[in-house]
Image (cartoon, rainbow, N blue to C red):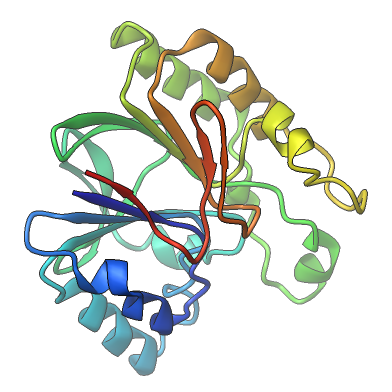
Length: 224
């Protein structure tokens, strides 16, 4: 079984949701960006990571637009679940962007990162990382992996939504967050790649957009 949530932002209480507490060995919890538990490298933070990694199920997360990329990149990349990622501790892993993984018998394309609306303030406070928004080379690598698989996967997990889906959900109503190259890239993918469901966490909403998109946040989406 796969359980999908949106941004946790370092809030450990999110693991207390009844759907998460029911997960067992062999199940997966996937967090679609802004994990937030790898932020300051403190002993307290490491203790929380150890608690998450010690759970009986496997927690997988992708980076978002509010994650400490410098700290995350200190964990070396390794092969697992058919793709590449970073082993944080125990049953806790970060999924690298542009990779395709075998999760619970299904093929999943993963791409984290994004563009934050508060980028100017974060640059001033030294909490913004250039790696948040993937470059064109990184986007091309992900596209090539999909092509090698026949442009077909079961699931897509991202932090940002495709541009047209973002507009549909009025993401830009305040005018504070323009579409990035990542939103445009995802818009092309949704028309070129076959998939059953696409999950994204950026919007902090729990909303299904028929026929096959889901904004996820604090109400887990269960894939049996």
